Image 1 (cartoon, rainbow, N blue to C red):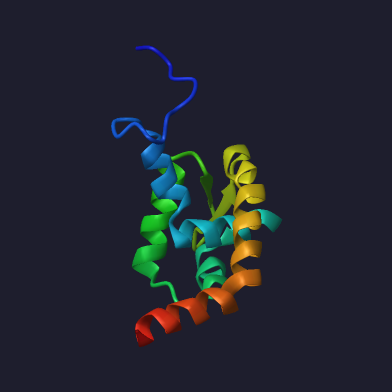
Image 2: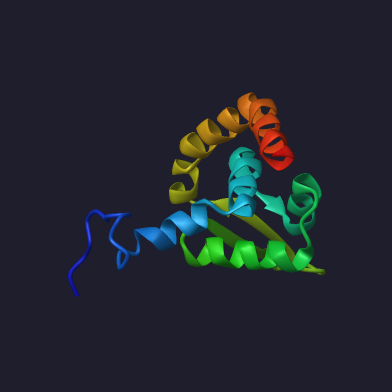
Length: 121
């Protein structure tokens, strides 16, 4: 099987679109931002994200682990302790995600005003 070096997001058959779906998910974005400072347990992640159900967080973490963005470390304790941390690939997303998050925070007022104006039409 030939290894793909670069993708083409405009090719409907390119797996780049799968990658964009993963990193464009709001929960993935928040997990990457929260795990930037180091490993956290499930409940710590859930509490820091806020507004996410345990089911959705579990699905997000599994998808991120499958895609090589996070690791799940189980410690042999009673009860078992599980921590999630970013992989090097996950850490490489911090810059782009931080840039988009900064833009969203800086422009939220303008975007919400435009949305409100469109709804009023």
